[in-house]
Length: 216
Image (tube, rainbow, N blue to C red; front, side, top):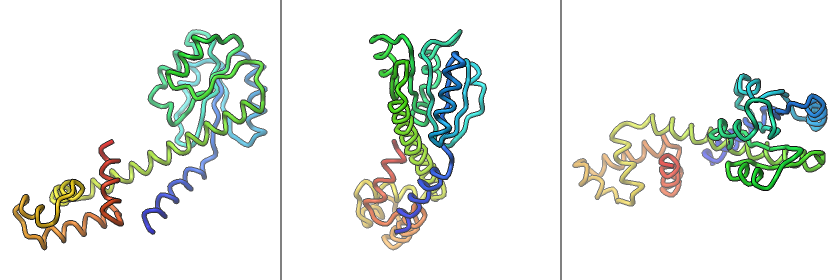
């Protein structure tokens, strides 16, 4: 079915981008060891000594995650997390610290942290967390792209087609829609057929789900 093939293609497109793991830690030995470990695992990596240096780096759209030290000079990890709040679904944050405590962990997790690990880091636990974070990022980006496609399709509808769509998804019959819009039932059917094709909806249930997603 065409719509489902489209969604599969979108997901495949995201997978074509090589995932990137960003590392922000002021300890050069930690940065270098993590860079080597991450590259050996097959991911691309970019390392930074400060939060400011990371913030100055151009944003990318491929699947990604951030391995972030809590204690950083000037702008610390929790402050950086606050600045990245909106972006965390696309770039999950894995906190690392050598002296974490319970309140700090709770604050980070409540603010959306993906994981919180203490140093010395267990390589297996870190790589597992990175893999899971990359998977979440990939899914979020794919969902974002699918939503963008839906908005583009909806934008291509005429004003009348949108009026018909609004009533179709609310459960009105063609005859009822015709009465509300003061047009013939045949005209309603024509508009309905066109908007279904433009939205690439295979059924009424399909269209209802698209409408809910457009409004979310």
